[in-house]
Image (cartoon, rainbow, N blue to C red; front, side, top):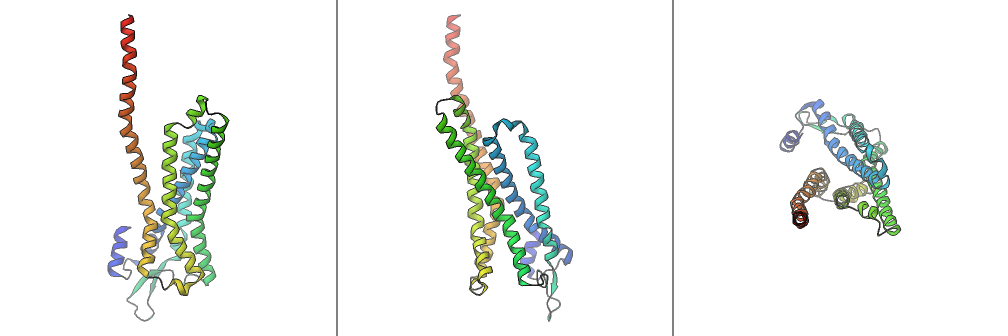
Length: 256
């Protein structure tokens, strides 16, 4: 979709036709929905791993089901964009055409309802699920730590791998909130008081939307950073293990 976005910015008017206008409008939000729903899947996966560790055998099947719903939900939530956006010609200058939502909604209330639906499904729903799952995880960790600080099972429960995964997911959540909150604050301001919101520079409004979209780009970088750290630490652990084993093996040889 990037070539169409670049071409649209250069020509200002939309030159690709009505069908491509609707298709591009679908994919413009599909990636954003998918990014939000995948974060929900990660949160649910971490929740079950900590709260119900005995069900770890079902992790692959549950992960596939969650991802299937994430993709299906993204498609269903993005489909209205193909109905909302359409090609509209200027009433006076008919050669100037634009891919817009003008004349789609019968009233301002319908337009506001659709905007609220997008905000609820793309921002508030993931945020509520994220907060519930991770607050539950934090409470469970505190409870188990208080119950037994000496037992080996407690140490295994807070193993390095799980701590690393928890740090990674918390980072993803923090980035999600930081990226999307400014844009939706601006949106709520626009819905509450359009007159004052319109005074904000258009470039700032576009920058807020672009900043929100960067969330989809940052997540793979976060995964890569944490995986690189894990791989770089692996040789150090291997050397430590070898150092610990060598004296023992020498002792055995001397005894022989």
